[in-house]
Length: 579
Image (cartoon, rainbow, N blue to C red; front, side, top):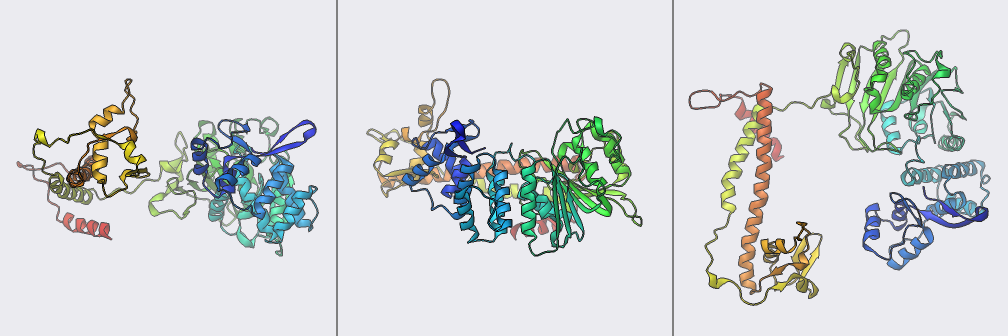
């Protein structure tokens, strides 16, 4: 993570920033910063970090941005963020916890004078809750992923809030981190929010965030430090809603000392199944009639070492729903995540007989979270209790099958139409007479670029003068002779339009060649479209035949079987496509 370079006696020498922070400071994207590093030889060199996550000296970056006119006036929030990094280095969770204590106490809690002045200046512009949440957003977006392990992203918090629903009672998170899930879940009707985490600074920050967000509301907030599995701070708690994104792949979670623990209602988890220990811990704290929403890696749904516990949870009707989320929601990795929704039936409720499987893995990480009909399936418990007990939603959710007869007929018609048009796109090109070849030395594209007659940009080579036809220029620049010129002796091909040579001719003749090249380009694009359409048609035909939705040709002349409904359904498909 970025921070400060330290000298003897822990003296701060310079503030370090990541590429992501440079982007925020300059008001550009991260890709723009990457381009600066590649293309600007005067861009500051890394002063620390690794090749994958380099760190840069803030003073050098700001100086460079000023010379490039790429910087912005530093906002009050950026000024506070920079002051915090200078004072706290890598301990940014502790820094934000101190800011939270400062905001709650009305002016106490920040020892560093520069940080205190920057915080007070920002509080003069925003509400205390907005100040702290803005800093948390920066922390989650900019920090190194290894440091953010266990701290839920804001995207994930929004997804959990969507599926957890409203709660009028107690919300509990036994691995709350900095409190993102605990704050997001349950809506505004929760009366108690309780949490626990092993990191003291994370606990302080979570507590400050919840107290600031609940200002003026009658909400009881308690967040305590400690290991929830080994030293449960709320042993008798039964919450109406439990939310949790537990730590993953923790071998030393305490199995040996917790073998007889009453929380293992579905069985003692294996050493490598710490996630199932957390899942049962959450279920243990769920009140009758309440529910739990637990974020787990996708592998937990299928690992062989956990199948016995998964089977027992299914038999007992504990699992109500499993949701496959899109990638990009975790703070420290890109692995897919699942949401497990568990219900503890009350005395009057019957246990679940089905598990609703929802597959949103193809959705955007920003939502929407309401599944389409084809993204869900109600799976009877008996169908889940096989040898594998694989609870991966994608195994049970299937894309709806198309109407093969309609789709195949419509694709054939489209192929007929495009094939009939394809021939007309090819220009008539009579044989050339030798005397028509242009005389004189050819023109180098580099000379045309230097002279301002041509331009090379995002759309490639183009004309910048009425003395030069753009299609003529591109056509000859991509000729076989120029392609050979761009290929090295080893066979390496490197596209360099500047090295191309084009024949010298008057503008009228250029336009004739330009028209021909333009027609050929249109033909090539249509041919590529036709090839893709042909592949799709063949795929639909094969799928339809193997699914017995299409029949092979019948009769002596190979006529297709008649289907009086196909014409009407084809018309409906065409109408939908034109809307």
